[in-house]
Image (cartoon, rainbow, N blue to C red; front, side, top):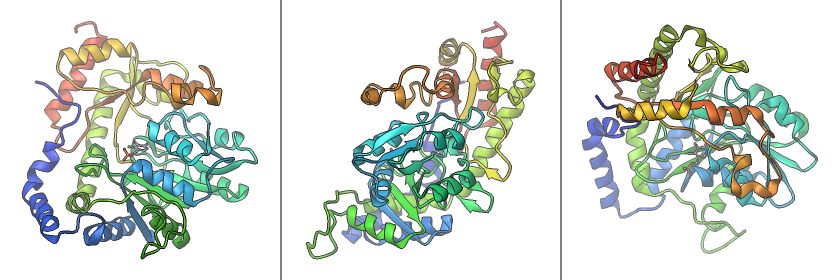
Length: 385
Ligand SMILES: *Cc1c(COP(=O)(O)O)cnc(C)c1O
């Protein structure tokens, strides 16, 4: 049996007629950029997040960029973020003209460590940009008090966390603004690029609405130089259909994750809670339990694995997909060489980059497929591969 790393057809198959009808409505409407579908999507996501404003843009990368610009990041300023994330996080910072300043992660959650972020702040720090990596909320209580006490902006990279919760709040409701991505592989994915900013602040929402359309306040009255970053109506229409299933899909991901963890702890007992320790007591350790009050959405299910390259090859030989998110932390990327970091600058991010492996997790993954994945890992480490 082969187990693909991701199979979006399992989500889209049952929705095909609904999606086709929605696309047909847009086709007939003649309005292909922004329009009423996009406005509905903005209302839907704002409502889900419990915030008054949402502004749809062309990608998650643009959502981060525009949120940062609207909050004053730019040349001469710094933005503190994590190096253990997708390139877009650090890239968006650099694109504003601000300098990305990295701080290491908490090895148990893979998220930016608030103490280390605080230590990395300088008088030039304009914003903090934590990421809810793999769909687990960052330590927002700490970051909100840190941002308030230091008078800096706080932006949430929620590209991987739509539907996640922390206490009584949803991802997208933390800080001054939050950025979502609708890249097709995300928990709520379109059929092309898309993104959205949520915010409680009317001033930030207004500024982003201007910036996403060349700073045009209406009638070619350009108040500032913006960009072209508008969501297209076909994406909004697909996303509105899929948004109705998001909670059920996220529940399913949590069930799959719990089952993986149970199976892995049966197979590799010493792995329990090991992620935060320096050495791996078992060849495979499942994710640490989520912090109290935190409800993750398992955008990825990520283990730490000994002999990772050999394990990946073994899984591939059995037609089982796996993936590494991310093999190189941002501070070691060639494009950020000028920032002056080196190997050893952020040991936990570097260790995570070399040890972690994402296993198949998506709506429609069967229990038999999951068992196949676990069985293959077991045979690999027991030398029966
Ligand atoms: C996907 C992703 C982005 C960028 O989103 P795009 O829609 O691909 O531009 C940013 N940050 C993180 C953490 C992501 O996973």
